Length: 319
Ligand SMILES: NC(=O)c1ccc[n+]([C@@H]2O[C@H](COP(=O)([O-])OP(=O)(O)OC[C@H]3O[C@@H](n4cnc5c(N)ncnc54)[C@H](OP(=O)(O)O)[C@@H]3O)[C@@H](O)[C@H]2O)c1
Image (cartoon, rainbow, N blue to C red; front, side):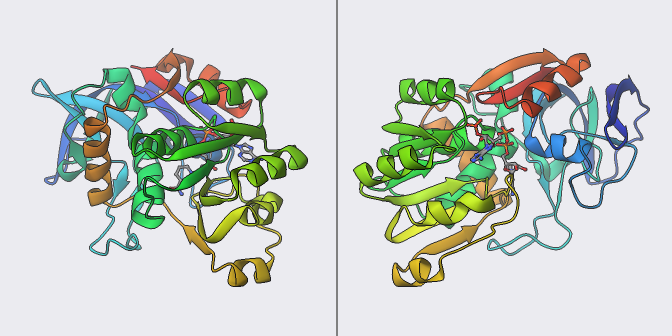
């Protein structure tokens, strides 16, 4: 089989790999499509814990066995407690060989039926980002239709699923981005308004006009986090699943306790979150927003696009 192997920090290659027979709890499936997550880029850049070499990268994938199609849950060994993952939890693609390959050995319980309204390309875009957005908003932040929601960095894979999920239940949704073009695209998809995240004055003025947000979904962290929490209504919730802009350097404690705010962290999701997310996507006929499609051999072009922050939605590979 062929796949994208991380050979050392910053060095990947598309090469022939031999695959062992599956273990007794696994099956071997042929992968037809996969999708890129920011996690893959962090791993290549060496900005991820416990990196090992060589490994086949990739967390998202769809494939088939005996002519039956499957979508893969990339969160392995969640454990019994729905409130948090076990210490054995791992994400497909590091340290276990991942989905950027033509075949994979995968635990049978990680295989789920593909939502029937999705094309193969759309289905491949869904797993990791979809379950992260779903757990953040529904399991953790308890989103409901009357909530006014802010999604930061709307160009991202998780952010766009968060946007689509919140819209699907009837929420009003505002967005931020680093680029006006992405704000424009979000407005076309039904955002109530948007502002650039580097323009503090414009952001504050948007939040003032809204009257504050009930829920903010964020993956940036960094020095802007405090500013975000100040735009929450009393009793509001900020749920974050990443810290792409680095550590949260400041938090105005009085703002948090006086306004009775909730600050929640979230990571991927349990098998229940994953299967509920698939049902939700099927019920609301949500179609993942696909930015671009590359042959797997053109992996580096896809990585460059993500590293340059050009994408609006998911970058998908055809194998
Ligand atoms: N904990 C988890 O389970 C989990 C799961 C998935 C992702 N993550 C993390 O979440 C982050 C996003 O992942 P992804 O796969 O969705 O990435 P992605 O598709 O590459 O998107 C990158 C995101 O970063 C946003 N961004 C960049 N600079 C920003 C800033 N200063 N303020 C706000 N947003 C900013 C971009 O917004 P624009 O494009 O609009 O500028 C875009 O939403 C990554 O750090 C990833 O590691 C964590």
